[in-house]
Image (cartoon, rainbow, N blue to C red; front, side, top):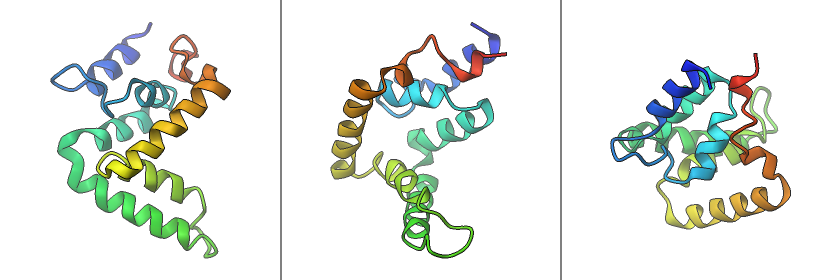
Length: 120
């Protein structure tokens, strides 16, 4: 394990030692992201970032709905819903179902030994 991945684990775990998003499966997916993007996602998932997360999620959902316009795309819709799922209980249940699907269909996505950050 590299020092960068150790630092990322320390940064993503809050003061209580819980993963940033509260779900270890989400934490495993975040650790597969490139380091710069993973740092941004970790910041957005912190409880203190709620006032940044909610408007960002809402803007991404609106951008996903307006995906017929240039620059905006349908990729924005699931990303916005994932951000809003931290604060909206109904979306949290849906996020859990998506994670269950990932565990069944794509278990290698959640495998901590295969991390994009550790491949050099």
